Image (cartoon, rainbow, N blue to C red; front, side, top):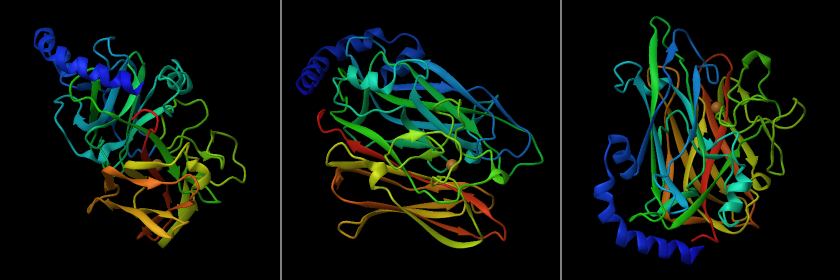
Amino acid sequence: MNRRFVLLAIAGALVVPAVYSVTRSDPEAKAKADGLQTLVSDPYRLDKIYRSMEGPWSIQSGIHLATGKKSGVQWITGLETEVIDATAQKPISQEFFCHSNLTFAEHGRTPGQYNQQMGGKTHLDWRLFTLVPGRPSIELPPGFGVPIPSDASLDYVTMSLNLNEKDQVVNVRMRTKVHTIAADQPGAPTKALFRRALYVLQPHGVTSKLTPACTPQAGMHVGAGCAELSKPNMSGEVTVGKPDNSPMNHWIVPPGHHIYTTEITPQLNLPFDTTIHYATIHVHPFARGMELRDLTTGTTIFRLNSQDWPDRVGVAYVGEFKSIEGIPMQRDHRYELSAEYDNTLDVETDAMAILYLYFLEKDLT
Ligand SMILES: [Cu+2]
């Protein structure tokens, strides 16, 4: 597979520029040829307060990123979503963004089948990219990408929310640019990444008083929630089940300052020793940041901060980690994830803390 990629890349570099300039006709084709695919969602009418997972949402389904079928592999190198006015289609306040998910199409092949199609050398799961409040775009480091079969069918789910605006109706859409390139194009990545989501878990989850939560319910689309599941079990597999005593990824934060910590070694379940090249987090309002620690060496790997809007409820910014060199993660080390919350209200609030990591595929690079 490795050698084939290189050959394709070389062949592409020689042939493509000539063909390139002739085949660009309509703007959509041009955008695709330039490595961008733009998706505009249905309009969402925000006429009252909509909390996380309560806002209007939609699915754009059956998306195909590849312009031709020649290459066999299509890379995704980044994703950006912008909240725009529904009519004028100009950017407006990003506070109305709940989350978005780029996934394999729900009724298409399974991630296992896609991995097989990629020669059994990839570790793709349903989700390719998730964007969350404070992180409206992800751009992987130069030379890195997530490879998928070029005939893959994708779904894109976007959801809005409204935590503040009570006095006027706001009509929004989500406009998304997928950064994508065929493996045979010049400048295509050579280093493949796979994604993992790791959760801080707490013994007592959110009860009915704060649900519907920011978590998918059974029967919902695979891309519907900002978390993959309400209950990641300790083997690292995912289930959406009846409430029991398992720790939950959505919990209550009393007033005051709190640190929540979970050992994530079982969730991580790495296929091999590898390196982290991109990371970002999902948290709820009143979070201050998350930290990943190596328990075996007793060192902090990184801390990613979170900032709320200064004048309204909501997460305005979350940090990211990006590196070409990468940070080693070892299969036989133990790791811990923690989240810091500072609830400045005099009532309870709710919390989640998810770390999204992109790891180097060993057998594809
Ligand atoms: Cu959430």
